[in-house]
Image (spheres, one colour):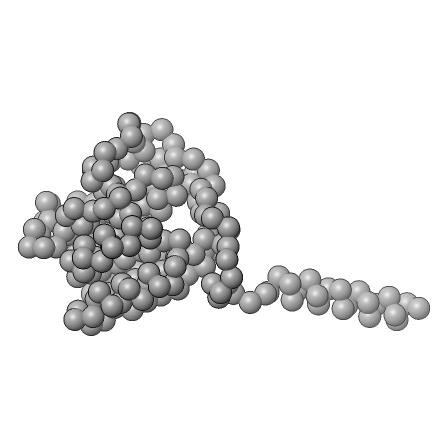
Length: 219
């Protein structure tokens, strides 16, 4: 009898372990609409921002916001320079910490940037996060045709974003493309892991909270 009980206990324990180590989300099934867990703190915005506005949130005013379980994100990345790698690393680290379901689309060929963006959109994520300033011009062409898809441009911005495109950057990381350059000068040394992480979290918190189509400029 004791042997049978021991065997049953082992089987039950193995079943629990197996359940806890289930297959990763392959995105083949529907999932709940994403929601923000937590709320933006005082000082993130002082009033409802107008479209294309630039806001400068108080440090840490986004810390209490995180995505709901099952949040699906595509990392659309281009460039192998140090700033681009820093941004992409911030996304992958954040996804692991927050248990976000993450897929990556590489965009190595400048001549196929629009196709790479299209590949990211076809995956139908909750959010496409773009890293690499060279993608800016192609994003400006494609995003306006996919208004039901949310985008977060990290470490750069679009000159005239539609309501589905949010940017998160800081002085030295506000490349705008289309020959416009930047308002503050592009500074690769400004792309630190801490800045990249803060911009990412602030940007995601803004999107989850319904504040989209704006530029979030950190100090």
